[in-house]
Image (tube, rainbow, N blue to C red; front, side, top):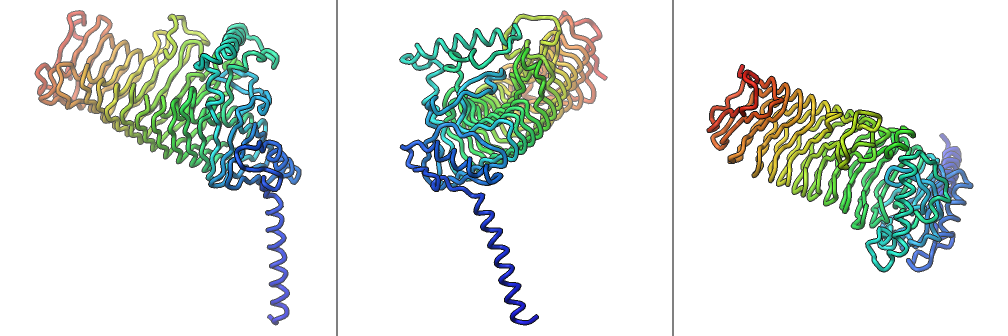
Amino acid sequence: MTLNLFRALTLSAFAFFATVALAQNSSWHDVRDYGAAGDGVIKDTDAINAAIAACTEQGGGTVYFPAGTYLTGSIHMESNLTLHVDNGAELLYSGDPEDSPVVKTRWEGTEVYTYSPLIYAYQKENIAVVGGGLLNGAGVNWWWRTTEDPAREHIAMPGKLAWKALLKRIQEEGYEPVEEDFEVAMHYLRPSLIQSIECKKVLFEGISLLDSPMWMLHPIYCEDLQIRGVKFSSHGPNGDGIDLDSCRNVRISDCFFDTYDDCIVIKSGRDAQGRAIGRPTEFVTITNCVMYQGNGGVVIGSEMSGGIRNITASNIVCYGTDRGIRLKTARGRGAVVENLRFDNWVIENSALESIQISSNYVDLPEEDFSERTPTMRNVAISNVTIVNAAKAINIAGLPEQKVEGLRFSDIVASGEIGLNCDLAEDVEFNNVRINARTGAQFSITNSKGVVLNNVGSRQESQEPVVSVRDVEDLWLTNSHAVAANETFLEVNGAETSNIAVTGSEISNAATPLSVGEEVSEGEVLFK
């Protein structure tokens, strides 16, 4: 190759890459170039919208926020748009309803019209919010709408009453509301911090979210959603971290939560309207997250009327959350929650139950099985360490629909109260150790088809290790008592039948077996 030819090729290559760089740079829009002050005083809403419009006109690209504080109203996303909030940059929500146009959304599982959140996207594709910066919801500007501020109760209370009346019409009468119906109610319906609705290919990565007016990140009817390395911190009412609402194909990883409400919640609509829409949340993986404080770590429900299925949550640490794993539903929700797996958890200092599975989250009168009846089935929970829990595990089904197909394996728990299981069917406890200070370690009532395999306790207590009442078909196997156990197995209840003890050594207990007088003869068998 001659020197001149080499130079010509080099110049051609340089020109090519320079053209590519220029093309890439042309899709990179710095909000300062559109008049943003970034001083936290002057509203930058118009400048931000101008940058988004210019980016969209070119077919998409990145709107860039360098270090600074950008006071702004609601920002509406467009397709093929990335908001890059850099380290040291803060988007500060103005909290002014004049900056927040009314939009259609969901609020606690019901479709409504209310104020637009800080970031809003409707029917967009290929959108992202990334970077190391902060999105500040300035929740204090909105929290008073819960009527906790008496000085403003004259504004908030009419909104709350209007919403309750409208909610009843929607859920009980099937009314389809229009925007005008929410003129008063929206004074109560606080916006989320970020909402994406009916969007595809959505990414949130690296950002920090602070003090949302309500829920922090609320995707609705979305597909192909990734949430990676996001930090959630909100200390106001309803400050959930992530609320997945009728979404599919979701990956959540490497996030940190410090909230006054649930950390990650999976939902799919509420009651009659939710069942009519019928869009489940499905195909969700959650992994490698730390959850500090909060009502629950990973929560299913209670608004799950469109169904929830095929969910996994692994490698999670919860410290000081009220609960760690929580499945909650109630009469009126209907639908099916199924095919859930929770693996490799540490749950420490939970103020309530470390693990809760409950079909009576709302205390309502018993009713016949119908479309209003929720079903929970096929749930596997494994490799969990529970430390210093108020209650280790609580399971509560309904008389008209027991929770079904539960598998607990390789669990070690300590705390005040052990395990209560009521109204369940087809339940297995494999390699489970509970050391609770009060009550029976394992209390099983009103259930059917229970397997206790290699279960036990080293807690010194006058209460039984395993207490059974009104249970049909229970098999205790491969278990053994220690000297600290006063009673190992206590069986009561006139409805109890077919209790079998095999391959176990429980004679070390002072009372290996206690059978109540109401239990029919021959229903407890050693094989």
